[in-house]
Amino acid sequence: MSNTLTWAESIRAEAVVREPYDFPSALVHEADIAAVAAVALLDDGHAGHSYNLTGPEPLTPSERIAILSRAIGRDIAFLPITHEQAIDRLTATGVSRADAEYVVGWYAAPDEASTTVDDTVTRVTGRPARTFAQWADEHADRF
Image (tube, rainbow, N blue to C red; front, top):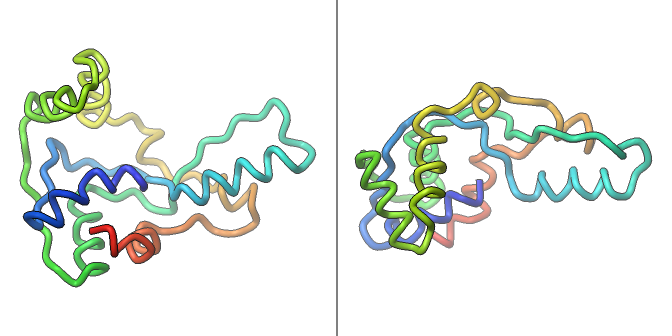
């Protein structure tokens, strides 16, 4: 979910998010990642295990924008950009072309694991994964 902060500047300046694709992803809250890591490091029984972490719901960028709009009390527009524009945006920040193509390609053709909700956060921590709406409320002041 914290990658959503890459939208902050354009939301503050123009109330716009530009993305090439509108496919869902089951984003995970950074505090849930930390909570699972803490349990895995401090409690017995986690050695040798790997965990797939997701949030509780797959959301498209458009759906995340609608949730953010409610959290900040301001409309935010979604403007599609091309695949190449997304690559150029990343390379302009210093990301290599190969890495930019990989990242944008991942969003162009998400695998099943990125859209499938997994209950790992609940199983490991004993509490449900945080929602994107919770994340948006916690970070609204940054937008």
